[in-house]
Amino acid sequence: MAQGEEKPEKSRGGGSSKVGGLLVNAIGIFALTLGAVVAGGFVNERLHPRQQFAVDADGKLVLKNPVPEAEEPAEQKPAVYFAFEPPLIVNFDDPDAVRFLQLQIEVLARDPAVIESVKLHSPVIRNNLLMLINGRDHQTLMTREGKDALRKEALAEVQKILKKETGQPGIEDLFFTSFVMQ
Image 1: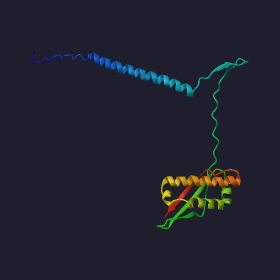
Image 2: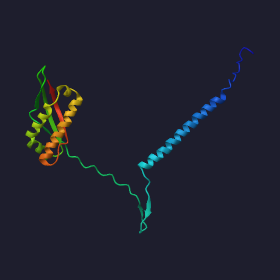
Image 3: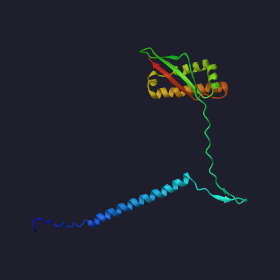
């Protein structure tokens, strides 16, 4: 060979395996695409059923299976809040220390008449909430789970009182707006 000539590369015999690998990949991609198209068609049919038409007695084209109109959501009334004043204060039995909990509670309703009922029955509500809280372990109330469980039980208690007194629970939610434990 002359000095400027390059050696021709020898084939290693792997040319057909490269083509075979590409063919397998192409078939795999085709199968996945076909599967996605078919599955997408089924999903689309479920979400958007085909409309069927018929001709009525007057010769007009009418829908056989009209799609029901989506109901307009009822306009939600604005929230009305009521804060129990003064805050509830409860002491805990603890042989090692004197423990207190000061708790500010607010309730949410959508009807001002419900808030008036809460005001009217606030002595019973305050009493029952104090009894509910007094039986708690202060260690449990230091956790988020303990506070959330207490909040749910307090909401159920207020709703139970209002249902007994007015015939409807009325209160949508209850919040601890201040939670001071010592």
